[in-house]
Length: 366
Image (cartoon, rainbow, N blue to C red):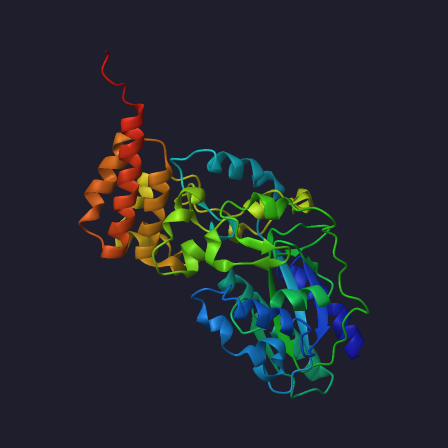
């Protein structure tokens, strides 16, 4: 087997492991360095200080794997087009919890890393047969300081859209991406993917908290995904009502993207939504103890928010729900068992519920 024959076999092996597309890119210093530095200087990363570390590695990832020359990029679908109705139904039900679709099944980090490692084993065995006994690889998926979307774009897997997500003409954006760094000298396509967003601004216009400061530029500090997952602080009060019932992440900018009408028709069963999370009642999730939360989120990306973040997020959603005596009672019962940060959100939610109750109560007849 020649190096070119090995390159031709890799997409076949990747498909057998559940990846829906494969690309190749040469490791060069990224042309997105100035964009990254400007984004950081504007403090659009908020409290995610790790994004400001290892900037050199982000723009020149060769240092992540000494001797690496290229990267194999992969895509894995997680949401079939048939699920769109459920998304809309959940968002339209204020008393139910909306969780970003990527997080409803098993944690993608573990799934993709494990399968990339399996792919690496096949590649290394083939490379050894070619006499390349010093072949080395490193699997990455949202777990190393790499400009992953730029890699994927350069390798032909799609283009970075105005909502800063990777888009593909045949799959939309309901997918994960990952990379396998290698010292094998694979070449990239002659041209990266063309941008097909055109004049469309649906994703920018629909954002509940107006997190996009312009096309291709997101202020994470206003993004619901950041507020409910990455941030450990109090959610700014002016943004709470706009969050609605979104307690972990947000999919609005993907829901309205025209390219998502081409989402996959089926996905790996590992990403099938867990019954505990899909269209669950807010009061049910709010009643969980920390032990229950840890049990229910084992092997799930949802655990990243932590128990306090979980209660904080649900408190806001409960405050945004229509008035319900059960909601008010659950907020009051939970308050004494939580920390001051969560208590502040519960107090806000109680005030919201009380105001709605009072507004709906008929005044005295004069």
